Image (cartoon, rainbow, N blue to C red):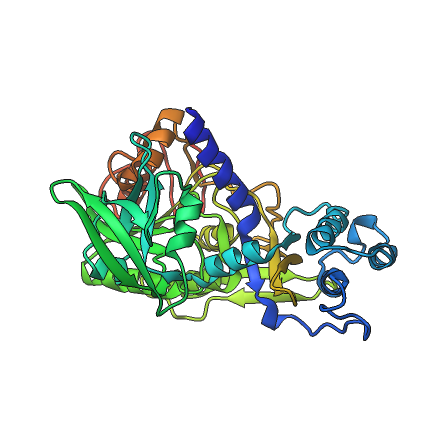
Length: 443
């Protein structure tokens, strides 16, 4: 694996680890009572105490990992902080005592990034960008549908030479993206280069853009019309995008479906529940248990959109909300799960805004699939266990358009299972039966 691939993999694994299942955002949390003397204009100490209060009221472990949380508060508040940066360091040090990577402090930039991620929206012109590895140019991967960039005719492969007159040659991908983003209604000037056309300039007006977190397409194999649906993330718009995908594929006469949750790091709890209800007519979906032992059970509500055979693709980076959906479909014998064991994250976070624009994600509950199994640090075992070779992983990562095609070994295995379910073929050397609930491992 080359250095660039390693960097991308490390960056992805970190996002998969930290994104998690988010139960709620700040406005769903109980109100916090702060000391009367605390004031943001007086001291960064206000944010320190806000964090302590939120953790004290809602953290899933009432023992706080055997830390004396009251003493921690005294230690935090007796210090004088000369800057926000110093206060942030103290907060992170205190949270480390919980030994929970999912309970974490977010500086204002990190908090904005996470809320944009879970909202499924951003304010900008709608471009997916990359640094071309061959010539190091800032290159358009694709314009987002129904965005200002798409309306202006920007195409995949166009190179962005300058942003508001600033050359992009020495900018990082993050720096370029930051220059392009901005408030809705404001303008950004781009100078682009296109093969066969040369240099040209466009002025785009930024807008609020809904990010496509669910993509789909009808795949016609030799035997079966399969609706292939890939879920990249469980954002606030993902469930409605899933509904649109299922209904459109039904119109196209899909005989079966493949739901691809590979490399999906999670997202909103309620998005995964809504999606499960689209596939299940009845049955349990997930239960959550908070610090007091109080639990909430979520059930299917007879709003199933299709009863056609379903296969779900998962891997070691399918985490959190992905595992909730996969677990519900597996335990209700609604789908055959194909791939490798999932990540194993069985906790739920709430994201809270703080008074200076920063935020904190706090683990507030544990969740359990219908079977009641604790999947934390264990993951979900596929019904048909099949891993990709390293060469296949790199090939599918470098060429995402090959995912969900005959060039994708896990997709091919899923199609074989669906064809067997439809009575069109047999799965070689197996006796797998979805109806019976028997599970099979294929090495």
